[in-house]
Image (tube, rainbow, N blue to C red; front, top):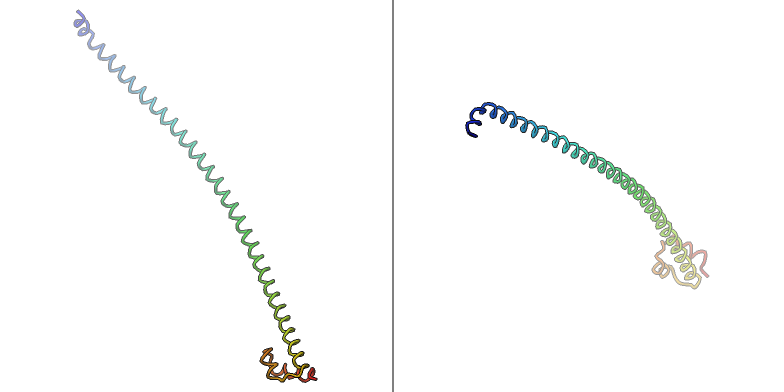
Length: 138
């Protein structure tokens, strides 16, 4: 009896089964489409966050680069100052050294030493020794 009932309504049962399968397929399609749309939104949000983070990092690196350039300029200025001070110290030591050498040559001339010994001990030129010898010899 049950089988006769199914056979008599076979066309209707088949039709509703096909309709049910089609509704299920379309439902799955719409659900999948909705999930894809949600995933797309999530990915776009991550991309925006990553872009913002990259922009902040870029700005940070630009700021550090500017600070390093300023420090580089300051170091260059300090190097110039140190070089200037070194030149000044060398100049002053040369002047002091030449004053000491001249003072030694004058004392030697006053004590009566000859020109060759003054030249050997001080390293002065002959014309300088001659002038010292002429003016300071006793």
